[in-house]
Image 1 (tube, rainbow, N blue to C red):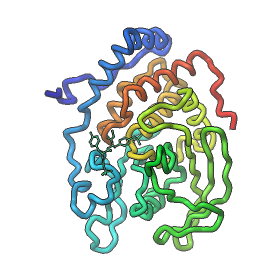
Image 2: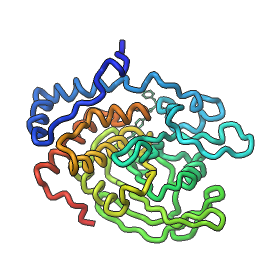
Image 3: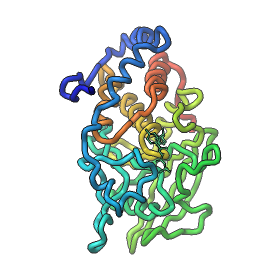
Image 4: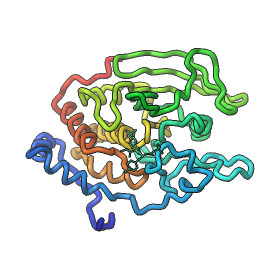
Length: 299
Ligand SMILES: CNC(=O)[C@H](Cc1ccc(NS(=O)(=O)O)cc1)NC(=O)[C@H](Cc1ccc(O)cc1)NC(=O)OC(C)(C)C
C-alpha cells in the first residue's frame, strides 16, 4: 500500500559542500540508496484524476495509454465553437526555478495533434521549444516531424511556421522559426537534443549540462512558459527540467534538493524523471559541475 504524500517527506535538501560525500553514500553497494530514494517517488501524484484525457473524444490524442495528463495542471487550449474535447492536449504545467508554471511539458506530437501543438505554443505565448527525442528511434516513431523540412513556410491549422535559420552541433540543433497567426508574427526558438536514447541518459551524462547552458544562454529566466517534450513527455523532459532548476539554484543557495524537485514535478505530471538511471544522471551532472569540470556550452 502506498503512503499518502502527506506522510512521506516532500523534500530532502543536501548541503552543496557535502554533495560529493552524499553521492558517494547514495551510490555505494550498486546505488542501493539511490534505488531506495527513487522508489519513494513511485506513487507521488498518482491519486489525481485524468478524466479529460480519458474522454472517448480525447483518447486518440494520447500517444501512450499510460501517460495521461492530470486534470488539475493540464494546459487548456482555447475551445473551438462547441467541439467536444477541442480544449484538450496531452500537456501539463510543471514548476521550474523561476515560476510555478515555468514549463509546459507535453508528449511528442502525433501527426493528428501537431496543429493542436502549434495552437498550444501560440496561445501560451511560448517563445522556446525544447525537444529531447529524435522523430524515429530504432525504427519506431517517437514524435511527428511537426516543423518544416526546408525554408518554405508550412501551415499547421491557421498557424504558419517558417525556418529562419539553423545551427547544428554534435549533440543538438538550434533553429529559429517565424511563427505567424493572422497578422501577428513571433520568433520561436527550437532546441533539439538529438543524442539522448529513450529510457536512457546522454553519453557522457554531462553533455546535458552543456545543452542546458546552451539553452539558457539564449532564453532568459523571465521568458516563459517554455514548451518541453520528448516522446511521452515524462522521462527525458523531467530530467532536463530538474537539471535546469538545480543549475540556477546552486548559484544562490547552500542547498540542493533533487528529491524535492522531482516530488514537486510528479505532483503535476506523471513519471517526471522516469528511470532510476535518469535520477542518478541528474546527480552525476551536478557532481561534474561542482567538481569544476569545464561544461560551457561552447556554442
Ligand atoms: C515503459 N514504456 C512506457 O511506459 C510507454 C510510455 C513511455 C514512457 C516514457 C518514455 N520515455 S520519454 O518520456 O523520455 O519519452 C517513452 C514511452 N508506454 C507504452 O509503451 C504503452 C504500454 C505500457 C507500457 C508500460 C506500462 O506500465 C503501461 C503501458 N503502450 C502504448 O501506449 O501502446 C500504444 C502506443 C500502441 C497505444
